[in-house]
Amino acid sequence: MIEPHAPAPPGAPPSWTGPARLPVRPGTGRFLVLVCVFVCAACGLVYELELVAFASYLMGDSVTQASVVLSVMVFAMGIGSLGAKRLRWHAAAGFGAIETVLALVGGCSAMALYAVFAWTGGWGGMWSEGPRFLLVAFSLAIGLLIGAEVPLLMELIQRIRHQDAGGAVADLFAADYVGALVGGLAFPFLLLPFLGQLTGALLTGTVNVVAGGALVLGLFRRDLTCRARWTLLAVGLVVLGVLASAAALAGDFERAARHAVYGDDVRVAEQTGVQEVVLAGGTDGRPLDLFLDGRLRVGGRDVRRYHEALVHPALSGGPHARVLILGGGDGLAAREVLRRPGVRRVDIVELDPGLVRLARHDPGLSAANGHSYDDPRVHTTTADALGWLRVARGRSYDVVIADLPDPGITASTKLYSQEFYGLARRVLAPRGRLVVHAGSVTTRPLAFWTVAATLRAAGFADSPYRVLGHDSGFPAGPDRSAGPSGAPYDWGFLLAAPGSLPPPLRLGSWHPRTLTQRELRADAQAAARTRIGGLPASTLVHPRY
Image (tube, rainbow, N blue to C red; front, side, top):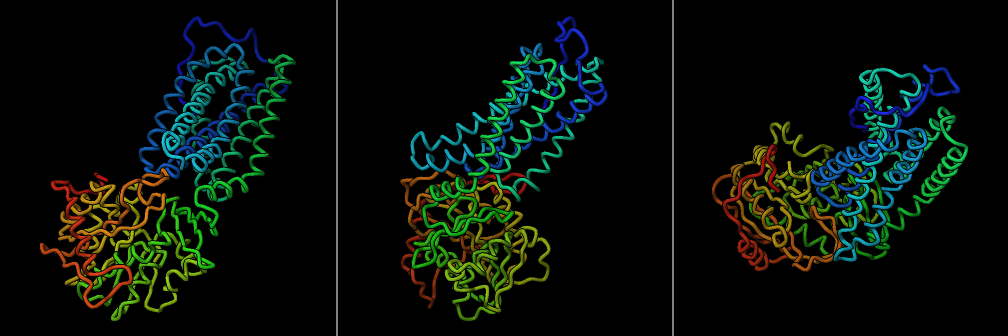
C-alpha cells in the first residue's frame, strides 16, 4: 500500500513545461492514472501479505515475523519516497522502470524464499538463517520500490491537469486505499486458495508490469524519448517472459523443493484451507510421517510411543467410558483410546476437515490410525476447540485429551490459556482427568512449566512426565529451522485433575507396547528435575509462551 508523502516545497522547480500531450482527453487520462494507482496499491499489498505468509510458514512465530516484515517495509517505503524526488523530473520513465523492477522482485520473491529454505535451510550454521536474511532483504527492496510510486504518480497526474496539492493527494489516496482493500481481500480468498503462494505472486507481478507499462507507454509515451520507449518495452517483455516461465515451472519447482524438505517419500501435499498437510511414506512398509505446516506432527518411528504416552496414563486413572479428544484429527489418539475396554463414546473436535478426510480415506494414514473413524463410537465435530468448549453445555467426559500443536506456535497459544483450561474443567465428570501435550521438556522447559502454572491457575493439580523419542531433524515446535538440535528429543505431558491432589501416574493392568510403569515413573522424575517455579499463568490477553 502506498504511504502518504509530503508535497513538493514551495518554489520547487516543476518537472514539466506545459500540460502533457495525451492520446486521450484529460479527464480520461486522469481516470487511467487513478486506475493504475488502484492496481499498484493492490499489487503492493499482495506482496506484503505474501511475505508475511511465507515468513510465518517458513520460520514459525507469525507475530514476530509479521512485525519484522511490516516494520521493515514501512521504513523502506519512507526511504523510497525520499529517493524518488530525484526521479520526479523524469516521472514517466522513472515510474515505468520502478514498476518493472517491482514486478520482477515481488513476483519472484516467494519462489526465491522457498528455494533458499528448501535447499540451504538444513545445512546448519549461517545457512540456517538464510531465509530470515532474505526475508528482510525482500521487505526492504519491495518497500523501497512501493514508496517511490506515489511521488512519481503525483507528478504524472499533475502533468495532465495541475491542481492544488490537497486535491491531488486526496484523489491518489482514495484510489490507493481502495486498491489496498481489494488486494488484501484477494490474497486470502482468491490467490492463496486457488493459485497458491508461488503462482499467486507471479501473477501479481505480471499484473504490476502490465499496468505500469500500459500507463507509461500508452498514456505518457510522448514524454519519453524513442530510446526510453524501446528500452522499457524490451525490459518489460523480458520480465513478463521470466514471470511466465516461472509460472509454467512452478509445479515442478514446488515438487522438487518439497522433496528437498521432506524427502523422496512424499505422497500427499495438500493445502486444506487451515494448514498444509504433507504425508510421506506410510505404504509399502515405509513408516508414515505427517507434517502440518512444515512441522513434524507424527514421526513413523515414534507414532505409537507418543500416542501411548499421551492416552494411557489418563485412561488408567479412573473411569473412561466417555472421552473427548481436542485436536487429534489424524485419528491416532482415537486409535489408542479405542483399544481400551470400557470405552463407549469418543468425541473428536478438530478444526481442519481436510485432515479428517485424509485420516478417513488415505491408505497410509487410515491404516496407521487403525481405521478409527469407521468405529461407530467415534463422533467428529469440525470446530475450533475453544469455541466448541464455550457452547458445550451439559457434556460430561471422564477424560479430556488435548492433542494440540506446540504451545509456542502463535495460533495455538489460546489453546494453552487459563480460559481454555477453565472451559475444559467445566466438561469434566467427577474424577475426570485432563491430559495435555505441552511441548518439549528438554528444549523448551519455560514453555512446559508455564503450561503447568496455567493449569494450576485454572483449578487443576498436575502430574508432569515426558517420554523420549527420535530427533528427526524436523521441528515440532515454533522454530522452523531444520537440522538436529543436539539435545535429547522428547515430548512433555501434564496429567491434571480438578482440585489440589495431583492424579497418580500409573498404567494399571494395561500394558502399552512402548511404555512400562517403571519407565513412566522414571519419565516423571526426569520431568520434575527441570521444574521452574514462580511462573505466571498464560491468558488470552497475555499469552506467555
